Image (cartoon, rainbow, N blue to C red):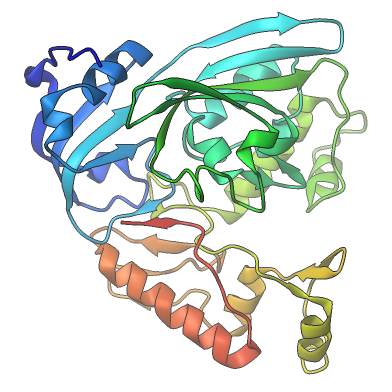
Length: 345
């Protein structure tokens, strides 16, 4: 392996990560360095500084809860760029830098009349985090449009391409969260976006919002605007109230288990998925009485029980402890285990 000379002047020491996580938690990184290209990250991976320290990859900081300082070499992905690499009358393959903000990419696609991700408007975070989490909202997941992921293996510095099947997508899951967790750094994501659009408006309140806006013949921009309006009405802006979006996954249980629980909870909302049933985690948490709960500087949002929030000077460990209390309470009430969607450090 070539041993590049890393510019140590670019490495910051004992730096606060408050501005780099949407919870707004004042955790400190032992070292922090940004990279803006494949060449730069290869240099970092080949450096003595990298070899001699634990390391942590940070994207947009929208899906992380820091419960302590990060005693490691934090590498922040700032690879930018948007490029159409192939297109025909039906679709375009668009290559995005992993450091691009996801919502900015959605807006770019809409401006260029490219569809498939308009239902995913206003989701926080970066493009690189999107396939890791298999982000989804309003009936659409990124797996439905993902063409390819380009990533660098941390141990070797080798570049590898992952097609859709290689990513082993599941509900808020991918191979990058399981078998290959912490083994690769995503540098670029290529999406297959449509020129002939098939709008998805039957999930959630999209059609109701379009009707309220007086839209009778919607475009991808109209759907995006409807989703943005819905999300803004329910979810606080992280710049105003620290949060990481949905803190918990919606639990999926067997039909047999659901029927037993439903016999005592007739009004429980649910969505059948083959021989399994998905139950809204927000409903479970709200029914358990946690919605609007406040404990000093942290709590559960008053409008959306799925959101744990930092009202200003909260501590990550306190938010984690609150999530434990909620998980235990829901388990004791309904016999349903909640799983955190947010990554914990």
